[in-house]
Image (cartoon, rainbow, N blue to C red; front, side, top):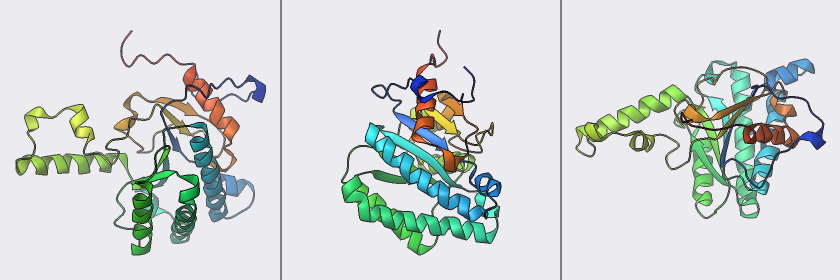
Length: 249
């Protein structure tokens, strides 16, 4: 099965929404290129991408997906121009304020993976507020990877485990894959069954390095602001066509 999507007639998309993967993760890539193609500033691409995220997250809840994890801002993205970083943080604030206002209606759970300490106190408070409200809901959980890096996550988990060992709460001889997973940001969340990357790039970009060990990958040339429900169906259909053996026969 090729990694790339194929442009097909919508009638040929055979995604079975009655047997969805439990967890889909998305690397939302291509906002800047989308804007450049239209002669717009990169910030316009991020604004369009935020609307696409809102549409796809709501749709995933509507079709009954259990978990959606998105790569919103990596720990390396701080290297981008100050204006662009500021615009992204402004969009995050806008989204969180709107989400808090609609959470009782939409009932979408939200969680954050990453080191939130470099964010402004206002953004950290908004993140914590959405977490608190989410505790009252069941159903689709949207995990937003914010100031997140896969290697950093593993290092932080190793440090936390080492501290537990030093203070007598853990035994290094009893460390297992499952036990180590309990030190990750994604504690309690099943690993993604399907990882989607938009814009055609063929790399993980430090995203869910531990969790994606046995994920299926779907890479599409579609830029994130143009990603649609139909393209999500294509990704799910591709996933459903694969034989997942997890190292067995």
